[in-house]
Image (cartoon, rainbow, N blue to C red):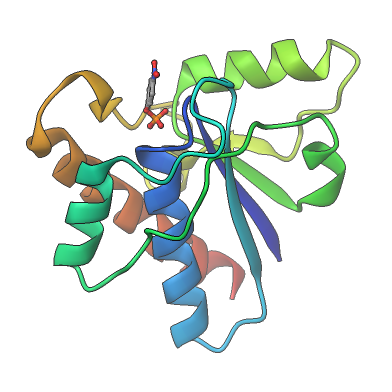
Length: 151
Ligand code: 4NP
């Protein structure tokens, strides 16, 4: 499986998703490729937000070597599944890919645990540390379900 996690900046939510799913896949001995990207260009090349790094570290995970990159149209070919953190990210992917693009591989991450509800992982960017813990918990649950379903 090749799985891409996508948010807006690729510095808060999707780096957590990449780190969590990679670790879960490693523990299971799964030979999966897991990456993350953002639909906005403003943080390209940056490491994850310090609070994402902090929350990850508290869970024994080092995500400091990740660097933000922008989602590109060819990701639709290169990955088997593309999970977006929120509705606005889905819309951005639609805009970047063009209306002819096949978005059948793209789904909201939280549909793994709340099927059909199209819920978003709240964007922690504008708030305090609590939002990063909330993001961790939601993303962790969804990644557990991905492992359960696809391994
Ligand atoms: P992320 O959070 O999409 O979870 O990485 C954000 C990071 C940066 C911005 C917005 C959301 N920003 O507007 O710069």
